[in-house]
Image 1 (tube, one colour):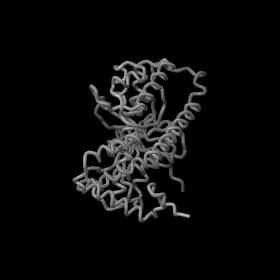
Image 2 (tube, rainbow, N blue to C red; image 1 turned 90 degrees about the vertical axis):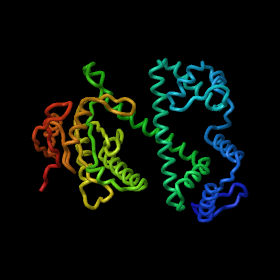
Image 3 (cartoon, one colour; image 1 turned 135 degrees about the horizontal axis):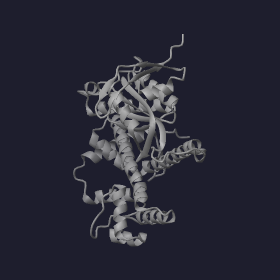
Image 4 (cartoon, rainbow, N blue to C red; image 1 turned 120 degrees about the horizontal axis):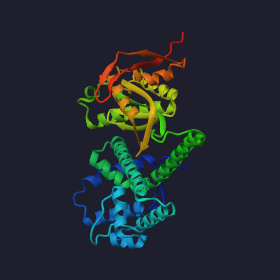
Length: 376
């Protein structure tokens, strides 16, 4: 019975032990990187293998032929490709596959059946393109970093090795993407079912932003000073540790990460108490000496109504939270007066008024420090 890290040599149908396979893989990467006499035919062969594995077949269609195969006009094809974030070719260049044509036919058939206008369709396509572009880059760079460490390779050799491995790696990454998408969609559906099941029974202010949410920021203290002098790999590791630890804290407390912005993370929660737990958890994680991988952060929290679009949230409460985090002390949480009033009814929390502050764009604000209540 072969060990789990054994692999099969497909050319000879023999089992290749893990260590031997690793050695072959490293040798392949080094040979590929140093072989300056590789022919153009070799590059074309690699492209053909990748097209078969990733695109389902060769690129045989021009943009004109792609439109014909999909049953839509060329203008709509170009708009689709632009929304997806991919370059469109001109003239007689054959850059598209039969699967591309099928995907186009399917999405425009879906658009017609659901009577989507151009704005809705473009938003759906753009959301897929924007998200997957970042996802693919994130995953590829993670693999490059991994192979650099594993085989002690330079960056170029590691990237060539990833290129060589993509046909084998893509199927499992694709499966995980579909699984994660379904789970995330189910999670959103579950939240909608709870939040809006009784919405028809209550009056709705048509002028108010649609979603009541707790929103906040966690910002690394002295980010520039902490990262000055770090090399690219050290900086990448520092940022990754922050993002990972922040996401773990936010998720464990019941919140959700909206996005990371350089040295800060934006989070949301569906109720103000959960938002408070998230905020205090973030502040505590950065203040514990034993958590050397988690840098100190300053944190804000504001309850208000927001607009959710493009995977982001917008509204006055988001702007206020961004100002509050700027004036918070390290490892502390600041909330606004209205949010403090809501939390004051919860005995788990302690609130301390802070001096009024003038902030650009918002005028005078009344920050309040949020802490856990003392329990002797």
